[in-house]
Length: 125
Image 1 (cartoon, helix red, strand yellow):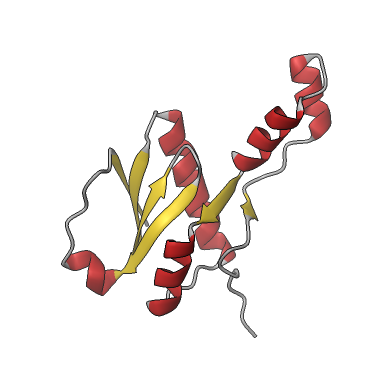
Image 2 (image 1 turned 120 degrees about the vertical axis):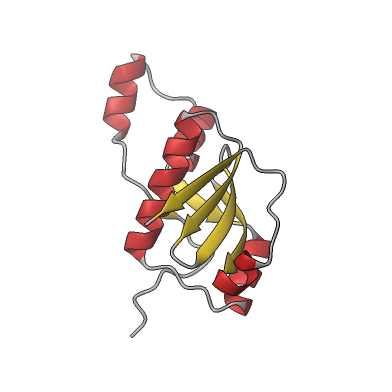
């Protein structure tokens, strides 16, 4: 039995009831606002990241994804754009505004790599 999360599926951080969004705004959210609310609560994987994770045998458990999503949320709150997230023996480059993992590597590739075009790094335990 595989308890991992399938790559390519969206993983919700926490649900925000539509009622609270209506109450906060005093009106119904417009279609684009609703989509933005949903997009802000998930972690997506680019096709490139999916392929790299499959090639490198990287599998993330739901609790690992939750930690990573929380780290992305924290990076967003500090204005990060592109973050390196290191979790155990996995490194990921995440585009923070779109909540998209751009690429991922395991410990072997991580040690012999130079990370460029990032503005923040998050080391998770």
